[in-house]
Image (cartoon, one colour):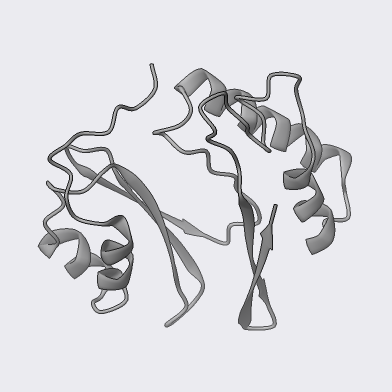
Length: 155
């Protein structure tokens, strides 16, 4: 079943993103009140000592924190838009694609996100649903030579 927006969620997730910039990750997790915020996944890159990717998932009840060191690749699918079995299917598409593309280049990974992987448009990487909800952009963060770049592609 798809996520249903609740009327009591009155705080913008965009404001939560901005708040995450202003404190260390553990302080943000411990001190930020999220009870008025729709569920979300927030990815934070911490490169103070070495590159570490932090995944913060607010499920509407609790915040879950996972840290990734030396992560080569990972795909996320919205927990509010995709049921667990569809998330698993999308992960399988990505794993298969990674196996088929031994030389990962930034443009190739972007191409994975730009193409359809199934005939079911509501579950596809380029998602389109009857209620006018659809993928409107692709954002890719690239870590190279100690720096980061962000590519944003409107669809």
